[in-house]
Length: 276
Length: 288
Image 1 (cartoon, each protein chain N blue to C red):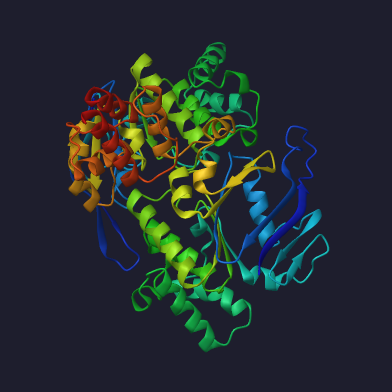
Image 2 (image 1 turned 90 degrees about the horizontal axis):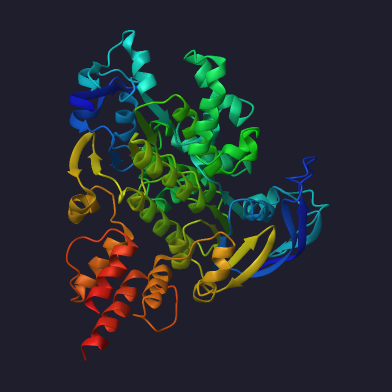
């Protein structure tokens, strides 16, 4: 579990003014869960994400990853092996000349022996569906393939947790779908904890927990159905509802009551079928 | 007046055989001034290559482009006028901001084309007003200190300040949060109306394309493979899916309802309000 208690963060602007970016964050991320974090641009999501593997060390408050506290000490390397990170722009995170080299780079860094490396590369590539592309250079891959490779490189390190900061925002719809499918599968089959930061409401509907951030604070946290019930709040802070829920809202206005908050097209169609 | 592309082709000169088939091939189209044109196609279908021809960033190897009285062909030289006439907003345009203040960044283009100081200031003020950026509040601020959404607006203002007649928007809202996205699109199409611009709108979001385009071109492998109004294009769901493209949400829902035998009407792109009415009638008919 990642346990975050009373986390605060501020930074200094060029005019010397302090700006609060995280305020009194308390959150438990259960092992094996799929957690989504949403919030408008500048709500503190990315700053928060960078805390989870010690890229930023807490200024005040505490974060523990499986009982190890994140501090500026030798443990930070242990934590970075436990918590992998994937960023928004796939082009900024490739080091190797081919996908294989790229995955190997991380493994070399943590001292994985040569004979073991081959297996881990193959295994990771298989898990993200990139096994046929290992010899390819990154520039010959689509956006979705690049992000899947980046996830593969992280998986090869065998982390317990993966934090992804808007991994789909530069991808086309097909690429987005590929990435989300890979994440859901790894979460289900390998029980890897996924922490997904995103702007796409339709991507978070399958999460175990949705965390909504605004002005550096957690304003709502709960299961997707609970969170998306709070429509006014979400709209007020610049978010929206998944399309199915929006449609449900329009239906309500003209007198068609569909009951509990609907999050996916499938749920919606099933509900209409029941009423028909 | 308008834009006429007459059989233009552009093939990338790449040794790599896998990539050498990329480009655009024999594209002809005619767009009336003041229209909003949606361009869709999967990644690598040639959308960006086509768009880069509209302001002569790429010159057609074959064919010619006519924008009002200007002609662009492979011999075109004096490109300054055409660049002023056609403004381009690329993906993540804020990456191109470089000046120390918002004013200087927006003034850069107008200054470059030799406007007088007063004219420059007027152009900057007008562009900022269009983007709903308060002049006094923002003019002296560093673009780097602004939020993502504001930075994006400043970047778009740098293009608008050139007073173009044609505006190319290539995924203008990528990476923004839902509300900023919605607000910015509404604002851009308001600017289109007030400035009477012709807009080319490239997006992967089919709902946005449907909402804002008066006419849509679908590209695949460097060619235009389908065209028509939103209603026409988005009724061809099988073809769109074969091209690796999505369809608006309403189309997906109506399709599923049809599959379940609940809906017998036409599969068409409509907005959520209309979709709610269709479902209302569906359930109502049953109760009668």
